[in-house]
Length: 330
Image 1 (cartoon, rainbow, N blue to C red):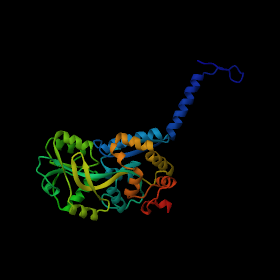
Image 2: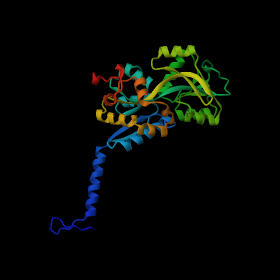
Image 3: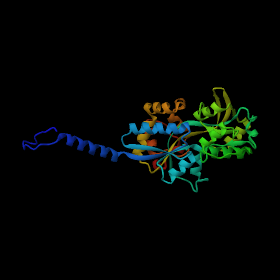
Image 4: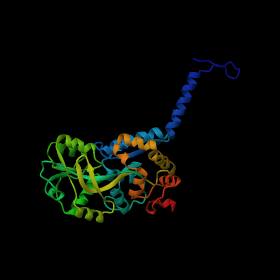
């Protein structure tokens, strides 16, 4: 015990106890001040899940006022539905899902005007992968073949369903989550699958470890048909580690709703767009180093920016397209 005199009154005070009490109060104050947010995430087998966990950790360490928990839900569409029901505060986002939400197309029953873009960090090509010994040489050869269109409930599955319908291709679709689809491919129960992401992709690398693969490209005619039908698709020519093909892409990011405070969205944007934020993202998702998240956000976002993000970008002299100006700023 350390004893001190209090104002000459000869009262003994246990300073160790005082320090403990003050520390406890300070810790409680910090805990109360930190806003708890839940981020809806894709499947844990995806490299994007690793990205979400890594970025959430960085944000928690950087912003005293926030405590983000990542919750695996199984894809952008499922996560966006949970966001709009108020079950999570942030969601993994893909531009095709955002477009459906804004238009009120299934599974969304009406236009979701409260949806806001927090940021987008990378384009996301659709990779059609089949076993090299399957005899499948083109997308049209998928007719009747056992094929996984992406994790069940994911935006990839929804996009691939639309692509196959538009192109008139009818595989024997095996609908399951990402982990089960990978195991089925490795054990030769399905001929192929679709995985969205930038190559090299960890999920595809696991598939390659078990079986040699081939990437199926789209023809110019197919690409024109898809990009003219769906505004959220753009053409991309992929050339990576022996893979050389053309396909369509969307973009991946994080969305919120207008319920998130302007102050919090501003701080999140400032952290993510900073040099430190980009370095943290690169540690868990190396492909992100190829892209400027501000540029991807401004080029690819479908939903209006959150007012906090909008203010951050204005403060840093960025030109913001009219389509992304939030209603609150008009």
